[in-house]
Image (cartoon, rainbow, N blue to C red):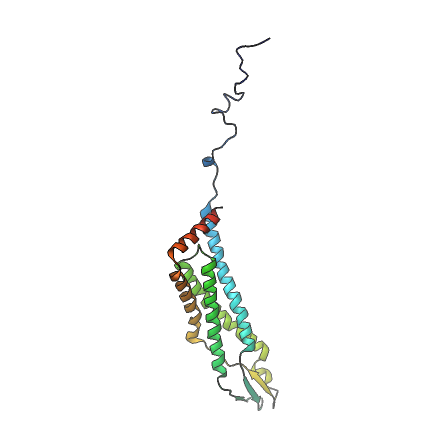
Length: 214
């Protein structure tokens, strides 16, 4: 028995899905991820990472500097006085190594940040490197002083050692030397940006943007 009015090719969902789509959602209607927030959080993480790594490197280098820096030899005459055998260039050598070490570290960190962190290139990172390099120089000096005092002790520790000698590191007041590290960091970063062709910089930025979107 047949029913001529009923077509087997008829869409069984006609009248229920409207345009024939069942549970289909256009790509433009789908919720999109907010890429701006992801980029902001990533940039903040990079800035924080630059600060943390800089302080860690400068602190470790400062400890090494404090352990190997040249010292004076002092002879305890009595409980209240000691004579110091002043050696040539002892204080200047320690001061010079402070300037060289902090400057080289700051320049190296600035160059690495420029090469590895492409999408944060700009004036803000330039200023940030100057700030963190200054903090790094202070950490270098503090940790170096602590390490030196731990290794050699303080003059008060030898008050009862009459007739004996001990080593003591000269006190270093950095003065303008504290500005060497931030100056070199800013200078190296600016020079790297200046010598980088605009075509290469734009291509690097495009690659970074495509990587972030993917």
